[in-house]
Amino acid sequence: MNRDWSTFIQGIGTLHSSRTLRFSDEFREMYMNAFRIPDGCRILEVGCGTGALAASLRRWYPAARITGLDRDSAFVAFARERCPGVRFVEGDATALAFPDGSFDVTISNTVAEHVDPARFFAEQYRVLRPGGVCLTLSARRGINAPAPCVDEQTDFERGIWDRVSARFDEIEERVGMRKYPMDEREYPLCMEEHGFRNVSTEYLAVDLTPDAPGCPRSRARAMIEAERLSALDALSALEAAAGDLVSGEELARMRALAGGRFDKRLALYQAGERQWDTSVSLTMILRGEK
Ligand SMILES: C[S@@+](CC[C@H](N)C(=O)[O-])C[C@H]1O[C@@H](n2cnc3c(N)ncnc32)[C@H](O)[C@@H]1O
Image (tube, rainbow, N blue to C red; front, side, top):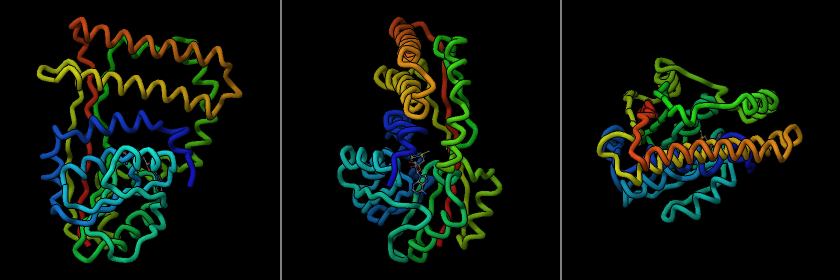
């Protein structure tokens, strides 16, 4: 359909690495207890991005029939490659190309705030069978305390971001980025207004702290590398969105500065010099039944 999200908002690497950490098997029981859905059901993931959650659902519900849908064709192509056993389709959450009552469960993660809630919930209600479950996962304000060595932007970098900020404002407006924010009260009310019953909310915290005792080294490194990817993807987005406003030399310098900061973070980790940088995401899990 288009590649706006993966080109300008969150690159494939950013989304996939951060979500793979967030939906890792370490948290399986916590998510499954909140979802309360049986194995063997027909699941539709709306706005599946690169398929990281779908891949976890594949492992956690081995008998489920899972479909992932997203309107970004680059995400869908990546997900098809990476996640066998799930059907991935391009499509629009506001006009789902599925018959009424064709799923037992619909699920989404950090999608609702970008889509008109009237269409978002009405369409999921329509494609669910009577008694089916709608799970809406929404990121709430978490904790983000980066290591000082990755948090120091130079005046040069700040100047470039200021130069291109209007361009990103236009893009975010065009793709509907966070166009429909809702707070913790409004979400359940909205689901009830769209016909869902037995609506419940739950909040799950996922703690990503590389220096935490007991955090396996490979996982700690994956946390640092996920942050690096996010920083470098942001520069690819900058080039795609505003390549005419920034020179190749400036971009190369930005990349070198960003890469160098994460090299330093990794070196500190390898040397056992704890930074205690942390990212704790708080996910609201809304559950409603048709
Ligand atoms: C913040 S990302 C989350 C992706 C994925 N759920 C995850 O957690 O990794 C939002 C996703 O919603 C998708 N999206 C936004 N509006 C959409 C729409 N109307 N129909 C289908 N997908 C949409 C974007 O392409 C993007 O993949």
